[in-house]
Structures are given as structure tokens and as C-alpha cells.
Length: 208
Ligand SMILES: Nc1ncnc2c1ncn2[C@@H]1O[C@H](COP(=O)(O)OP(=O)(O)OP(=O)(O)O)[C@@H](O)[C@H]1O
Ligand SMILES: [Mg+2]
Image 1 (cartoon, rainbow, N blue to C red):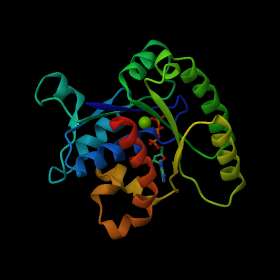
Image 2: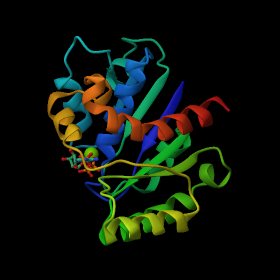
Image 3: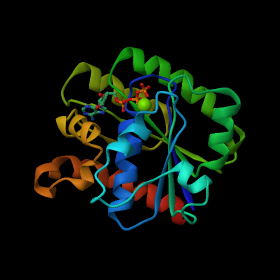
């Protein structure tokens, strides 16, 4: 069983978008997937409730906890803004990796920088038991903000998995309870292409 934690203490940076689409991808690949929602806002849980039953199943953490399903292949964990202290430490200890989404804005960069310092102090991260990586979110090329984000991400020395563009398909997916991997491939080709390096990295570090 593999666990990906999606986290950044900064609100609104794309955690739930990343987590729900990761869950959708692994389900589409035929895996048994649990979407764990640590956020009291329950955005990921609400997305799951909206998910059409004809699509590949994604299970809630409650189903797993209550033994309604057997051990999953993947647990994808969405976390809240302001995530810190014992709960963060506990989630990091369980996870194979932490994926941190960041948007191209000065506010996001400063807040994420502080969050990365917090991650750096975690024992599981220091001992390379849990890997940390970055994803640029809502990135439009050729803006100063994007250049600043890329410079920041490079400065951290962490793996930069991908830059996902600002795309309406994510908002549509959120509304309908679907991931981009559930939509017609020709319609989302540019977006699914941007996920490939992220998906390869996750597969590599969890099979190493
Ligand atoms: N790549 C993208 N393109 C377009 N819209 C996006 C993208 N990523 C996220 N969004 C939109 O940005 C908003 C915030 O994203 P999301 O809810 O995933 O952030 P969050 O980090 O989970 O927020 P919170 O801290 O409140 O939990 C949502 O409306 C979402 O649809
Ligand atoms: Mg969220």
C-alpha cells in the first residue's frame, strides 16, 4: 500500500485538485484507491460524493477504516490549509512522498518557503523515508510570476515534477466529481501530457 500526501500550509494552492486527480488517475489504471480527506472543509469528500458511479471506483477513508473494502493499492491524502504540528508529522510519517503544489505568486512563494522549512525539520524527510517534491500549479508561461516561481522552485533543490497550466478542465472536474483522466483523451491531451513526469516520479519512488 502506497501513500501520497498532498500538502502545503498555503490555502487555495491546488491541493484538492492535485489529490482528486491523482486518485482519478490511479483508479483509471485499475488500482484500488482510497481518497483520504484530512480537511474539515471536506472538498475532496464532496468531490467523491459527486463522482458518477459509472467511473472507476474511488473509496473514502471511512470505507477502508470500517473494513468495507480490503487494503487499497494507493491512499491519496488531501490536507487542509494551515496543516502543521503533530497532525502534519503523523501524515508525513505514513506517506511515501509529499507533493507540494505552488502557484506563481509572491504570497504563495513566501508561504511555501516557510512550509518547506517545516518539512525539512521532519525526521521522516531528513532520513529520506518520505520524499518531498514540487508541482507548479496554474502556471501560465511567459509571465514574470512564472519566472519567479521557477527560480524559487530551482533554488529549493527539490524535484520539480511538472508545471500544470491554468485550465478550465480542473474546475469542470471539480464540479462533476471527475478527474481529467476520466474525460475524453483528445479533450484533455495537453493537460494529461503535463502529468506524465509527475506520474513517472511517483511510480519510481514507490517501486524503488
Ligand atoms: N491548474 C488549474 N487550473 C485551473 N484551476 C485550478 C487549477 N488548480 C486549481 N484550480 C482551481 O483553484 C481553486 C483552488 O484549488 P483547490 O481547491 O484545489 O486548492 P486547495 O489548496 O485545496 O485549497 P484549500 O486550501 O482551500 O483546501 C479551485 O477552484 C480549483 O478548481
Ligand atoms: Mg483543499
